[in-house]
Length: 162
Ligand SMILES: Cc1cc2nc3c(=O)[nH]c(=O)nc-3n(C[C@H](O)[C@H](O)[C@H](O)COP(=O)(O)O)c2cc1C
Image (cartoon, rainbow, N blue to C red):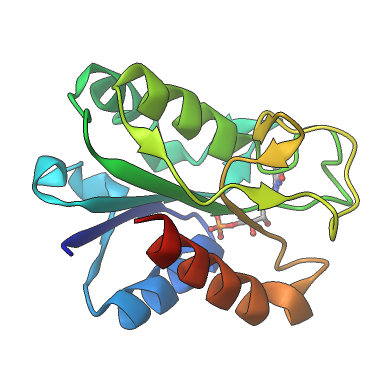
């Protein structure tokens, strides 16, 4: 299985997660500032972004999100991950996962790795679909003790859903 990992990160939080995922899948993680190069070559595509402003994508994603929408991801499975702050931004927690998820759907890709919102405490998120989160939502600011377990569980889930 060929895995491609792309991420945008301002302070390095999402970069760390992308690197951990890269170690697990034994591939390098690519900063989104380098573009979505070769994305069509992978069986499993992992896309990561933190959320900034008030429910916005991480800056470096802004140039790529429109490109992503126009791609042909039919037959591709996509997992989405990101970091946010559910205490300070309870209404827009990890919104970037939702923005990327909507783009992936428009491109015809299949999102895998939905997760439960049960262990979080936020009011709203664009990442919610049928009351589940559209991927791996991490909160380094408030729940960093859960980060490793969440990553491990998500990777196991992705492998099962492949
Ligand atoms: C100015 C500012 C705005 C933010 N806006 C949001 C937001 O709307 N939703 C959210 O979940 N987190 C928000 N955050 C929290 C960041 O997403 C979080 O700190 C994240 O871990 C940063 O990851 P990065 O270093 O990969 O960019 C914001 C943080 C700052 C400083």
